[in-house]
Image 1 (cartoon, protein in one colour):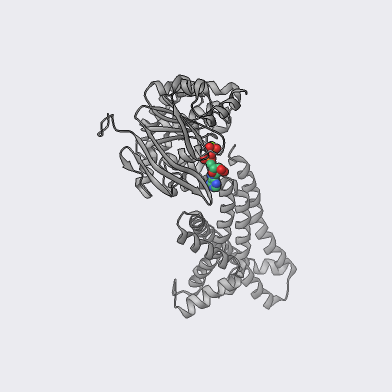
Image 2: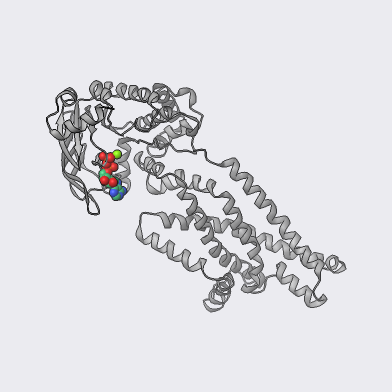
Amino acid sequence: MNDLIKYAPDLLAGFLKNVQLSLVCAVFSMILGTVLVSMRVSPTPVLRAAGTGYVNIVRNTPLTLVLAFSALGLSDTLGVSFSDEPSTNSFWLVVLGLSLYTATFVCEALRAGINTVPMGQAEAARAIGLTFFQSLRMIILPQAFRAVIAPLGSVMIAMIKNTTVAIAAGYLAESAFVMKDTFDDTGVSIPIFVGIVVAFMLFTLPIGFFTGWLANRLAVAR
Amino acid sequence: MTENGDSTPLVVLEGVNKHFGSLHVLRDINLTISRGEVLVVIGPSGGGKSTLCRAINRLETIDGGTILFDGKPLPEEGKALAGLRSEVGMVFQSFNLFAHKTILENVTLGPTRVRGVPKAQAEQRGMELLERVGIGAQASKYPAQLSGGQQQRVAIARALAMDPKMILFDEPTSALDPEMVQEVLDVMIGLARDGMTMMVVTHEMGFARRAANRVVFMAEGQIVEENTPDEFFTNARTDRAKDFLSKILTH
Ligand SMILES: Nc1ncnc2c1ncn2[C@@H]1O[C@H](COP(=O)(O)OP(=O)(O)O)[C@@H](O)[C@H]1O
Ligand SMILES: [Mg+2]
């Protein structure tokens, strides 16, 4: 218990890194996931093939490899750099890798949502003169999102927990990293371990409840 | 009056063919629809009536022949195709209202997003149209809260909101409970009286006799008979049509 109190400031700072990563990745993965699903259902074969290929490759690659690629491949080999400050650079490399990865799950959740929207509505949209992308944006996706709020919540919860794999992308003082660092000093400390778990649960549990509630509230009556 | 004058036909189909795989669903269709005409298309299920309707606003592509709308071949894609579709209203058997939008939003979406009509103006016109089809009081409800007959009248108002040159109706009353059929037919009869060009796939003989100028009987992808409504229902020329009529009239 004393260890937990002693290292609390470091642990808290680490956890806040996870929160930061989560928020930024949530935004990017939602945007990219929406772009991907638009490609996957588009009438243009090239876009469809590109979207499908991307999702199948990235979704089936272990996250640690995606992040390692982001750090080693992009950063070290190709020289992509977001900042001269190593921890800032690492932060954005993690954001990049984790967003690219999570977007594939967002895409697949949304695609399931699109399947719940009756085909006839898309035809009616085209029949009044909306283009494919207008009908996607105004008719299909709004209903698809509402249909999969709960599954999207699960994708976000998984993403939040995945921020602890950031260690694969280099130096970033987030929870898992700080925990490991601390254990190097103190030996394994159950209170520290439990403290981190509780912190994550305080973050993710409300997301589960909130998205469940929102899904009911926004359900489209048919 | 249009630039072409009233005498040119609004729709001309010449030698139109369409396959679904090996299934030949439209066979050498030749058909002309004049401005202001109400054409009823009737025939057995699977005969290609829906496909014909959908080909006219290019929801379905064709593999042979030509379709002229307002004197011009149908555009193939992009903005021009969307533009054509905005001029051809379509009313579906299953209503297909946008489930997440209110009744009024269903009617104003096209004018505001496709035509760029200012919102207030589109809403005013939308309310007028909803009053006209008798749904004014439900404007702020969602589709699921309305009966089938009401939803179909909204779908008609949605089509009218685009000021279309023509409206296609694909079995607009087939999915309705019997007591709601007439309220929808009444709206359609009103449109016909006001001079709207209409192509209506329906088996409603009462509607055909009161509102149609011409009946086209379609079976196995072909136009088998064209006739006036009265002649068609009392004195069909072809055996195929007589046989079909004897089946639906016994119901
Ligand atoms: N998208 C499609 N793919 C394959 N076959 C189709 C498709 N749409 C219709 N068909 C077939 O084409 C034929 C004509 O259909 P349709 O035009 O819907 O006839 P109708 O409206 O007169 O009942 C039917 O045999 C139907 O099964
Ligand atoms: Mg049909």
